[in-house]
Amino acid sequence: MKTINTLSLARGGLKIRPLAPTCARFVSTEGPSTRYATVTHVSSSSSTDTVKALGRGSAYLLPVYARPDFILSHGKGSYVWDTEGRKYLDFSAGIAVNALGHADDGVTQVLSDQAGKLLHTSNVYHHEWAGKLAEQLVTATQAEGGLGFVTGTQPSDSGAKVFFSNSGTEANEGALKIARKVGKDRWAAAVPGRKWDSPECTKIRIACFEGSFHGRSMGALSVTSNPKYQTPFAPLLPGVDVGRLNDFDGLKTLVGEDTCAVIVEPIQGEGGINVAHVDWLRALRKRCDEVGAVLIYDEIQCGIFRSGTLWAHSAYPVDCHPDIVTMAKPLANGYPIGAVLLKDSVAATMTAGTHGTTFGGSPLACAIGHHVFGRLATRSSVTQIAESSKYLTGRLEHLPKWFPNILQTNIRGRGLILGLGFKREGDPGRVVSMARERGVFVLTAGSDAVRLVPSLNIGKEEVDLAVDVLESCIGAL
Image (cartoon, rainbow, N blue to C red; front, side, top):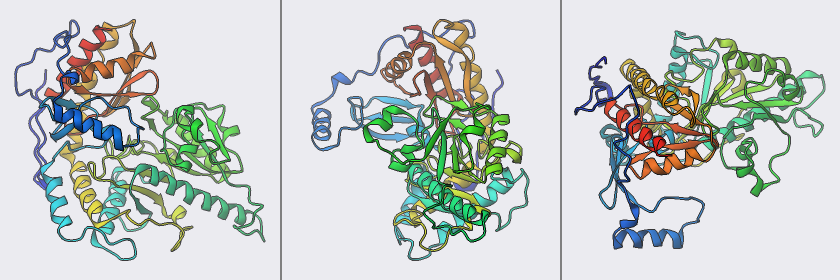
């Protein structure tokens, strides 16, 4: 197998672990690994201190999370340790967040330095980092492609704007608000004498898709078409229409003259690692143009190089591109931040006071985001992601052949947002639990997939450990 040389970046001090293993590990192409058939991480053997800490959480925390009975204490790189000293490979990266892993030296230094200078200002005043990070996002999109820019566009200070929030949910809420206002403007402009604030305005509907996940606040939840999340909180935002991903025939009915916004994930994360086809996105873009609807790409999980390119749509033709991109998860490597990136033509509707946030875009969040994004955007980092994805995908492709009665045929996704599809719906949850009991964190996606979204600087050794454990777990089903 080809050995990949260690890649190191002077900029930002990024040290990427080599894809060559640090210790000898035999990887079979003849059959699945069975070396992790036995449980190694038993949480029932917890100390008195751990039991007390778990009891405290049970007593005082709102019980909205189903968590295993151990407490994480610290991490480094792609690994975390619990209070009992047990080591785990975090192959979920905090749900696709920790792009540079845990306790990264560069992130820690920026956090410490900026916190000692200026932590929070509110948005009543300017600070230096919001503009720097916004410039970075816009010019990188122009250079890498996306939002209507072809790859290689000369960076400039025109063409797009950025709004910062605290999370992905808030980014989507902002995008939906902006699209609703654009819809009213376009409705008024269509007929002389109309006013945008007329109660007769009908261009207020929003289209979304089955299998989507856009957040848990009321607006974002209204376009997250999963009864498990929606039903307890109904009635939700009215005027929402739900279509099916990659369904060409339904677009004309779904997106009509009264549609102000369409929101879609180019690669659905929570819904099952389902990829929207390029031709379908082109048809969706065309239909939005026909009726004057704003097209929003939610790239909170698949964006910022996780798919292998800056945006999941960066390499697509511009006739597939959106008007708005939302982002969050990896942007500050775990420090809360979200952002809305939008074309100038859409941003023109927003004026002072039309949207805002107290904490969003703070000096600390933006300073960390600027550091993290700058490191992820280097050629060496992008190359490393491609090599890691190729190696991981190559190993995963053996699994459907070895477990044809358990796994679906194809590996879903691309880059480092990948999914293993299962034929029985209960199996993904069982595999996630079994892997955790063997020291590896992975996630479910939808009802029939295991989701693999590791840190973007993982090496071959981490890939081998994760896949060996998955093979052992699937073999035990």
